[in-house]
Structure formats: C-alpha cells, structure tokens
Image 1 (spheres, rainbow, N blue to C red):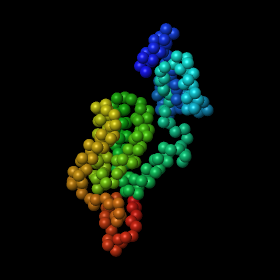
Image 2 (image 1 turned 90 degrees about the horizontal axis):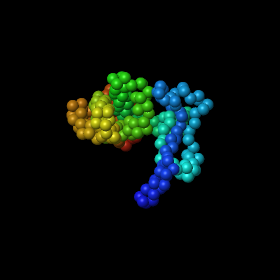
Image 3 (image 1 turned 135 degrees about the vertical axis):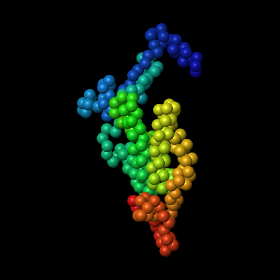
Length: 243
C-alpha cells in the first residue's frame, strides 16, 4: 500500500503534482467577517449554494484522473441552517431539549450555563479586540447544544438547590473556557463537567435542599423550583412537575 502510494507520488511529481483541490462546501454564512468573500451580505440570497453530496462523490473520480490527491474543504458556515422551521433537525433537537429540562425541573442550570459561557466568550472577544462574529459562531456549535440540554441538566448529578445549580453551571462554564482557551485542549466541556461534578456534594452541603427523585416528587411553590416529598395521601398518584 505504502509503496504504491509512493510510486504514484513520484509519477505525479514529473507532471508537477500531486495537486490540491479547494472545495467550498457552501457560500452561505451568518458571520460578517470583513476579510471573507462569503461573509453575510456579500453573497446575494438568490446566489447561495450548497454542495451536492452525490455529485461530489462522482467528481472524486474525475479529480483523481486529473492528478488531484489532496482536498481542502472550506466555505461559509458549514452548519448553517438556511431556513429555520420545525423540519430542521437542530431546531427539533433544541425544542425537545427544552421540553426535557422543563419536565425535569432543570431549566435553570441549562440557561445559567449558556448565559455564563456566552458571557465568557464575548468577554474574551472584547478583551482581544475580536469581532462579535467570532463568539457568535462559537455559540452555534451542535456539541454545545447537546451538552447544554442533555448533559449538564442531568437531575441526579446536579446540585439539589437552585442557587447551587446556578453556581455549578457557572463553574462548568468557567472550567470549559479555561480548558479550551487556557490549556488549548479539546473536549473542554466534557473535562469541565467531569471535574466540576466532584464539587456537587460540597455544593449540596453548603446549599442544602431536598434531593431530586424521579418518582413521588413535585416542586414546592414556596421553594422556587426546589422539590419536596408529597404526602402519603397522594402516594400512588402521578406527580407532575410545574414551574
């Protein structure tokens, strides 16, 4: 395998190759970077294009015949949703996530995390003099969406009190920012959540509240989002979580 690749490369060198092909996946973007030809507003809406996966697959054979051995992908915002509607997977994912955190009475930790993390991204951009398009683009990550709605909001691993959950969310956001921009490591959100989860028992001790239970629990109106046990007369009846 390696010898055949080497022979192919030596053959192409005599013809000035191997060559590189730049492929623009899309020319659509919602960032307004002044240096980019695909920035928002520079391409008329009628001229926005997305690559056709089937045609590109057939084009690979043609590129190979023309001594192309390397492909560089670029373009506008690759994860850009052209028109947000209920059929879009990301829109559906966020809506389902909103229902999940609402029914689990953990919307506070999700929104506190998103607000804290967004504040740090915009604060960093302000400190460095970066355009606002950079933090806006960083907030459009699908991994961030999944993390905020489906991971950090787990009722059994987050603090019991609302104040504790807000503190926990801020710690996770700060830890993720440090791992990503201070240590320059990947998977910053996961590392931060794993490390900050160790502090959950400590937060529960400093800010105590009734522990979350999946069954036979309902939120107390007086506790502002906390949970309390239902009385024995209601045992066996379905419990509903209402904010």
